[in-house]
Image (cartoon, rainbow, N blue to C red; front, side):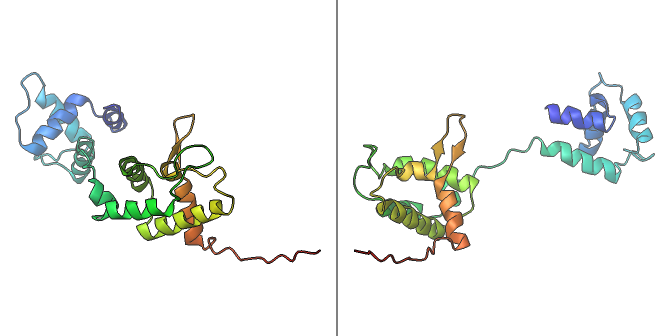
Length: 195
């Protein structure tokens, strides 16, 4: 609501003046408690109305802008957000993680229902395909497998982990960027053991 009043102030429009403008656009008779003659003269002086009481281009654009504040955005369904076969893809994702407890004592794989909430957040905030996500996950698990899963995050925290300041971070997003940039192609170095 504050944004609307700020826009009215910026355009030097009083709320009653805008109300009359809106009524003219919608072809509605203004309430009797508003002095419509006074407001119409203000609208004409501000180049919001022509002498024939026709809205100018400026007023049409402005009324559309104000009306946009009242439009509700439709939230996407889970399948619109993550794809029709998202459950199968989440199961594929889960299979990449080892079927064991991590060194922290927590299972590496979490319940699919918990994953759904984490992935919903991920797809609302990032734009990666499932192919990239699965490749990034394989890279992550492979990196930690070499370290015997030391300090590895479980399947849910890899997607989204909440910090102390209530913000979220995503190691999955970081690994997706590594895959896209080609940094997942780490060269293999050979080491000779000298006896």
